[in-house]
Image 1: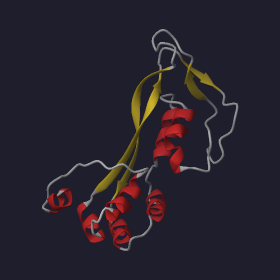
Image 2: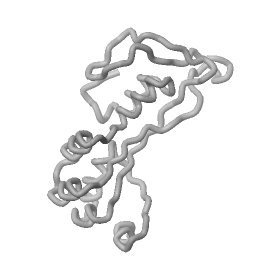
Image 3: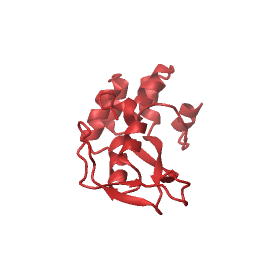
Length: 163
């Protein structure tokens, strides 16, 4: 019904559980929607995850004492010590990390040809798409969340990297 509504010009927002935005395209096809309908009905796919926010009352800078393979860390990162404001947790609330896949003519062609999600992701990243992990790492560098939190919520996308 959502695909049919979008084809008549209606803006349709929906949810689907996938690891990243390109995988949503293949999931729709796996659900029985014809690739040409997926390609012609979508404008964008947004993937999101929630990460814990470092408590602003006890946030502190630190120099990482370990390396994470494949990740260029900034010289300073942040963590929460734990305080009365956050009940000793070091975190307070959550914020989102996002990955926005804009559907362009090449991606439409890739969908119709049933190109694997990994290849679609490679193309989108080459065109400037920021991945969930990249958005999370930027938020870790800004002191919003921790590197460990970003890795925790994106690890299934990067099984070769462990905490």
